Length: 411
Image (tube, rainbow, N blue to C red):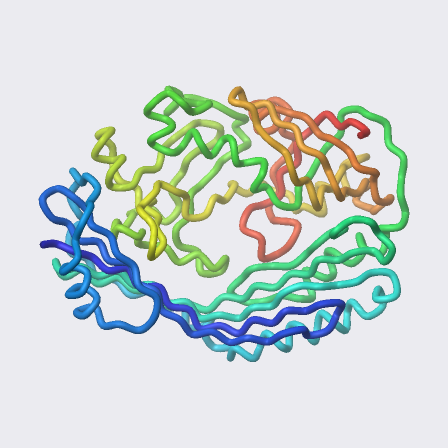
């Protein structure tokens, strides 16, 4: 019987901060394993948390095989690969304490107006996949994550805003230098008329969520995606490109091999290039089903089945920096919190803005009241796309800033 074992390990130091003070400090060193056994065109899956040898895991699982799921695809060929980002591993776990102390000093001048709570985590991650056919794939790297939620004293809201970063190396100065001027302007509330404005979302995740569906094989090939049938055709502005990136150490992306063992030839797979739809993504199952190539996008946890998903979506960079574009715009709404939005099947998009600011020629004019923005996928990446920046609002963010004209309404 063929089998493969996915092993996930994490050693970390986690710090929780409440009201600017360390509330708890917890270390963790844990291993999780997921086993798949392939027998008579079926997959039998098992999981385990803790230390156990691969031999014992296989032996105990084989003795209790029950219900399997159909399997009609072949496994990848024998491959050996080891990815180790030594630079990201150099700092000790305790280095995250320095991050907290550095941020606390910078935030001290705001403590009479705001309460800051958050989390800090420094971790070493291990990921390996091996099978009985000789496959040996392994990645080892370090990662840092920290964030602050802030609340104005006397506010009725659960939170009023947040900031932070996730990166292989931490740049507290850059994050705070970019965010603290907006906190300073928080109490300067402006009036604004409903209308059409340039808008910049600090995080583009919500903006990409609808267009992403069109690149997943099951959606695209069944005609359920917004851009089904548009492969190799223009779908958005020629200024817009989108890539699925599986290896970029500077941004903390280490997925040269996926969770099935597929090693993709291109680290930057073009999904959209100069407005033209170029590729869709597939795991082994969907590749076999639709007669296309597996793209190294089979994702699973130690205790879950494989799904088709992206590694890391990154927008193609433009020529001017985020700050240069902001300085060139008479008005621009910068969105820090826009939660609760949704797309229709046709690509229409609307979301409330809980925290946004108006900038004039790059200068912060003040905080805006709660607003609602409306646009469509076709407009924001097509006819109403203003410009793609060469960088992101924060240095460690993957994708550059997207400036698009949207309809804005007072709530």
